[in-house]
Length: 278
Image (cartoon, rainbow, N blue to C red; front, top):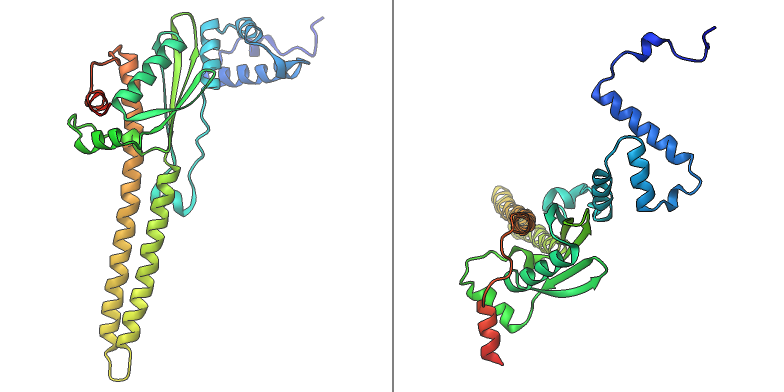
């Protein structure tokens, strides 16, 4: 006698769509983790074993783990600041050949030689840099014989994290913050707006006096306010362009790592200037 609790055989033989398969596997994983008393303390080996039980390769689990460990929280920009000046963070990640130590060493050399950055902190598998503010760095950026945009120097901090996926590959995540730059742009735009309002009101007050011309007051005041608005728009557009160039700069660094370009170069203008000043 068939068990009434079991679904009909005809239903079990119906093929599932890709979306349905993803939902089933996702829900099954949630239920499985919920049944584990020590789920929050699972090791990497346990996660790999769990993935293999449901047919997920160890390489894919390790890559997912690496992506999670290098994930940078990029808050969605909302409100007036986000609309006018864009976001504050650029981020990019890539799988490259090499061990984390070797890749971070190459990155450190590149950032210091070619991006005019200097080390800020190193902790575990993460490095951070900040822009050089010394005489040599300023001189090299000012002369700019290479024609490079030095987009990363606009960031208040640039960071890199490298997590091994296997013996020969690692996931590299780069991120950079433009919070200080956006704050400065917002302050500048606010100052321009304040000057525009005060100027427009002053023009109106000077013209709307006994015997004055109201139409002239409206014309001059409106022109003053429009000029301030155009300047504010330009400040916001320039700030968004900085974020775009910063994002492109991070992607270009990863391009060099991914395609095996040599990030260790010969003597640069910075090296020559440093040697001269010693």
